[in-house]
Amino acid sequence: PTAREQLARAARAAEADVRDAALSLLAERDDVDAARILVDAALASAPDNPVHAALSRPGAARIAEIAARIATAPDADVPVLTSALARMHVPAATHALFDALVSTSATVRRDAASALVAIGATGALAAVRNLAVEDPDPEVRRACAAAIAG
Image 1 (cartoon, rainbow, N blue to C red):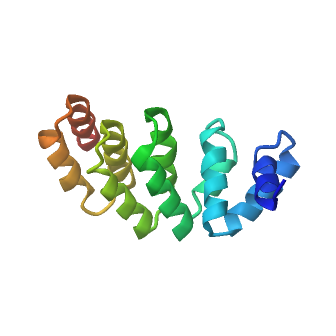
Image 2: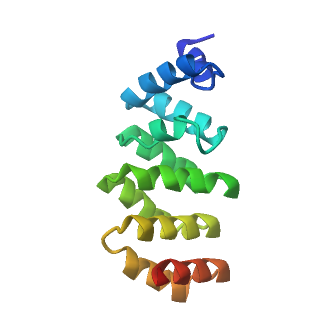
């Protein structure tokens, strides 16, 4: 196995010390391979797994990988990806969430809108208010109205 494959396996290890060491190493790196490993591991893990904290560390490669995955993610994966961006609290991650508001996926638009309001992003209320009125999907409109209502 390649080093990348070994690191990916270690990030999903049942032994906490092995997993935590791998996640620490991956979180320190800001490259495409590390970002892909973290995204894959987060999507395959329970919400309380430490991989989610590692994925949420700001980094250009992580933001780019998450944004790319959001564009094609199955609905079940979208909350993991939008939450990771929201927890980063950096402009590039917030920008990726704003970009997601125009996704062809209603789930992506809904979750991105909720995340932007939750983090109090500048311009979020206006953008989400617009979606609450104009989005073609009634579920997105309802979720956006609920998000801005508090």
